[in-house]
Length: 67
Image 1 (cartoon, helix red, strand yellow):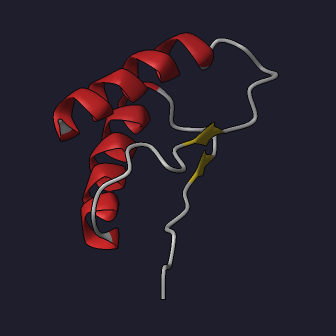
Image 2: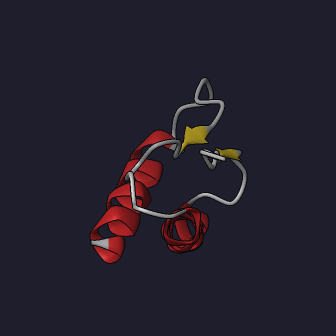
């Protein structure tokens, strides 16, 4: 599932990077794994894939803290 998530964001970034009005990619709550550690690993892979096609657009991340 992580790879599919990352590849989706790569394809989306490839398309959206052409538009100057896109101000960021917000990966918040996508997907919703059981732990923050799992979410971080999803984010790391997605960031790597996005940066292969778009090195400039900001990427917005959030980790929900239930404690």
